[in-house]
Image (cartoon, rainbow, N blue to C red):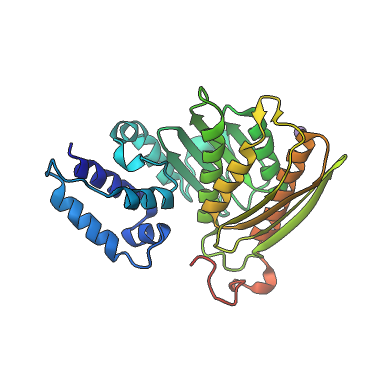
Length: 309
Ligand SMILES: [Mn+2]
């Protein structure tokens, strides 16, 4: 395969993942999709040319960044992993708004609600997140990182969100990719489930104490990503879990759900308590923000008229 052919194949994958060429353009920071159409045409012309250099590095990086891929993703062959996951992806696509019987057996999804399933596969992690914003707080996790699961459980329980997350990650290296990528995929699922955001409260905040610890989380489902993270852990690890990874988790979540999120741990001596108050407060704040406000009667909670552009 020529370099241009490989780039073209991966470019098609990005278009598919984004939903369309213009959506890909928007995600990667272009006003219009014209320059990407041009790129696509050029690659199609060059695909049999051994000497063609394909997508230039600065643009490749822009595309990778916009789509949450790691550096160098466009230059790698993803056909093997795709074959393996094609069947899973198919199943997941069918599960959007229409949960399969299998899933229902393992995890009870009500017939109504803002329900989505999102699958995200990279060389480092293979993740499926099913999420129901109008749930009852049930959850099921299979990620290989128990302390993260304990925290995700807080989001489900206190957010009244049903959450089913499976992840096969490169834990032989460390927990980093698994934790960050679960944040990213959960963010993608949240964004999808929220849709246009018409009629929701949009803002949410909560203070949650646990013994000596106290945290405050304030969020806005604004359509713009932003994280303010004031959390100084008193220890570097909780059990086997590296506490630095929580910031990576929230970064992934914020960038892909497009919310503004302010996290302040106001006090706390026990690191487990510090983490738990943050996740409980996040769940509570999220619950408020995603709830429908009856007085809004389906209108958009924004003078701009949109929270997605
Ligand atoms: Mn606990």
